[in-house]
Amino acid sequence: MLGILFNDKECKELDYVLRKELDEMLMDLNDSRLDGDIKTAIARRYKVIFRMYARIATPKELSRYAVNMRSYK
Figure 1 (cartoon, one colour):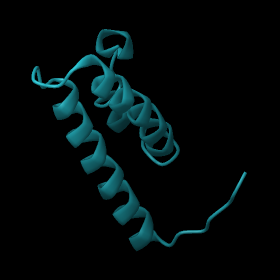
Figure 2 (figure 1 turned 180 degrees about the vertical axis):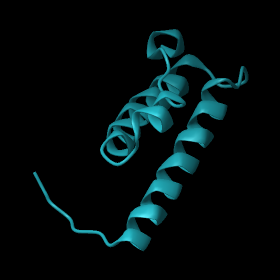
Figure 3 (figure 1 turned 90 degrees about the vertical axis):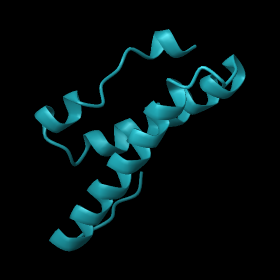
């Protein structure tokens, strides 16, 4: 396990970057043009990024990105 110290500005920037990445992946997961293998890879990455975001987000903010990943496999 690694530990990193962030100041407030860095924490806000990390929050922004993770949210934007989650938004992009949700958009890709809902794209009907992508095949199952690609969606599976995106879903795996989504889980990792979501867990990172869960460490800094409030439950209210986190609920926006909580999705049923079974529908994307």
